[in-house]
Amino acid sequence: MWSFDPETARWELLRTTGAAPRAALAGMFEYIDSLGDVVWHANNWQMRGTWRFDMHNLRWHDLGAKGQEGRRFAAESPAPEQVGYYDPRRDILVVQRGRATYHFDVKTRTWSRVREEDKDSQAVPDGHDAWTTFVYHPRSGHGLLVDFRENAIWSYQPDTHDWRKLEPKRSSMPVGKKRLAYLDPLHDVLVVIDGINVWAYRYSGAGS
Image (cartoon, rainbow, N blue to C red; front, top):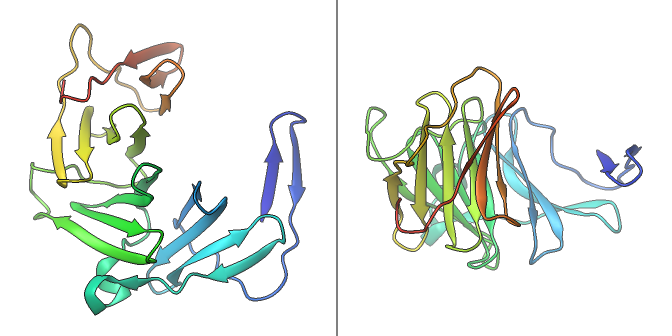
């Protein structure tokens, strides 16, 4: 485990003690504001579990995550290569893996597979860390997913589990093989960078 300080531009090796999760390939590492710590999640043969890292004491803690209504953790939580974000308004993790959408309730430590479509469905995006980015939009409380493979943007409403494919006006998202996407909360825009081209999209929260 390493930490990086942007102010000093220095890396530091964090020497942890006690039990620890496996360093599974393509797991999910996300900061949870309500915990003040990060969680590490994986669900395959390498590791099945959701762990919390105590950044002050440099120790790992198994959250004992479970599936909703007594269902198996393996069936209700996402596999590796997922994309997701923390939603501070609802205190949940929102994750997309393939055509399935998952929520993790931080308070109850419960995973729920809230929606799943066929692999060829066009009603939801195909979430994968190789070609999608999924971010939280603070003003609307929705999620925004950028699909570089399909050159598309989707919005997600966590309360209704509704996905909507958006149609940006004026200009289209740039096309390239080395693109980067992120949410700029200060200017309230989704940004896509392709080389020297910078494209910004303002989401209204109404599916525009």
